Image (tube, rainbow, N blue to C red; front, side, top):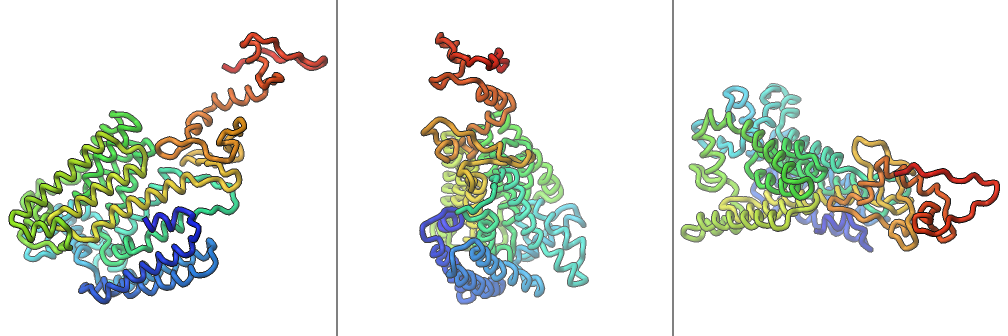
Length: 502
């Protein structure tokens, strides 16, 4: 991917790639005022095009970290901050924001976020009851003054959930311990800033934000599963599955990752927590308004409801459903077949780390969005964000130390890394001696990190290093075990005592 190559890797002409990337984003944003019929999209396109062009101009300067940071700041200002503040001040938003805020008010008043008899498509709530929680701030603050309307806007809370989940996911996965110096890699903050400033995330932040909390929760759940925390991953999955049914494919992906890394029991615990939490969040709505929930959550998004869904992008599934007799059933059959293929792949070749799990989930969601009888291109932002963010986190966690070139990992909740954590040099020709990182396991953690940090292993290695060495490079104890005579001890030197290291 171009975004991954620009913000993670270190290509020969990195400055040119940054410039081309921001220029392409400017061209994409500039097309919205010309072809879009939605007012909020036209406002965003105008502001974002200016910000992207400013970022492209800044990157023409020297290829330095400060230049890249300034370019990302200009893109964020033009594509996120300015259009969001303008639209918030004007009270303009996509219909999804109004749906979420009304659902929050209904949840407080009637304990169910669904209207029994909606009169228009605007009154249809296609989301699960958990999404209504993001509309409660607007209902609690009221709409009497400008400050309450601004702080209660559902877009702000959707963006806040995304940012908090990305921060928590990075902390859960771990970060690299840097000891100073200059690194050739783009810093994580700059890379994530470029991702948020990209049209994939910036447009939803400004105009609707409905898919942002779902994307953040899925990223966090995958990161927790990759760090061997099944209960926490299951709890986050339950929160995601209570927002939209599109989060449900993440449950088997997370369970497959946990089963491969921690065993079937861990996978079953995560799945059980996710199922229990989802049922607890969805069951009240099912009991209080079963007919309304079935029509609005199940029939409406698939194009079989009373009202026609506005998600009408020319996806393959939508074209098949509209242009071919019985095309709706054909599209649903292809959708189920795609889900079956992804499910079989999880059994045959389960994901081994965060990136593999994110890619598998992104593939499954992309197939679902493309083959569904009703959909829009904006849904594809979710799999793109999953694939790119997982690579940014892995690159940050495995960034080499600028001093030694070795991978030094700092785990969350442990003491900060010191010079004692630097890998000990091995024999000549060993990759650690040459400055290369130690071999890593599936999640990118060095294999020696599992044993070298154990207190017993450290004491044993220290005692072995202090033993007297024989002329041929073996310790005196090893020479006696091999049957060779021990090396002579010079007169006046104390004889080594028996080793107590097991």
